[in-house]
Image (cartoon, each protein chain N blue to C red):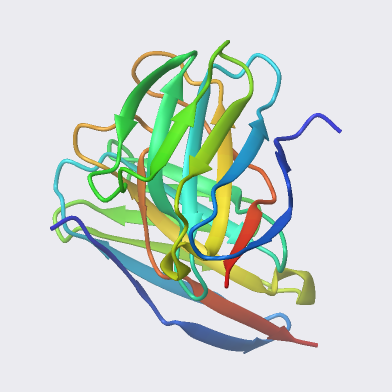
Length: 116
Length: 114
């Protein structure tokens, strides 16, 4: 399967713990996005990488959230000192867009976080 | 602020009927409008998109229309089938953002009854 893969698919943690999610985009896709989706809502943009550079971050993104894409391939999203409000599905997407028009987003199946 | 409103939140149709989902967006700078289908336990999948220089686009049973003046866009599915049952999201590109920096609506749960 050459789609976007995310790991782990499910994570249950206690409030205050740190969690990390990993995303492997489609090979050679230079654009990578993280979104968050809560029950009954549409996905909410968190951050965007072009290659290894983090170019966009949501104004709503707490300082407890950090994302990296060190070699321009896989990405990690870390949440420190988790809170119950962080419980959500974390979606990763990649695209092969070039400067200007951009391209279709391919989403992974998500990592579901439950904070107790 | 930036916003995309989507209606209805739920839609039930009989197999073979048409389904229409409508969205409005707030920022006139938005220039890209994709529609995504999300099945239970899966990530959203693009089904059709339209850019601001086009008024209508069709792909087999699916069509999208865009009215830039009114800031409305709609998804039309004809000859619905049970496998069309899913949650559908509209989205609009964000002012100043990359093409994948999207503002999503809250979704429409479509049920197609056989």
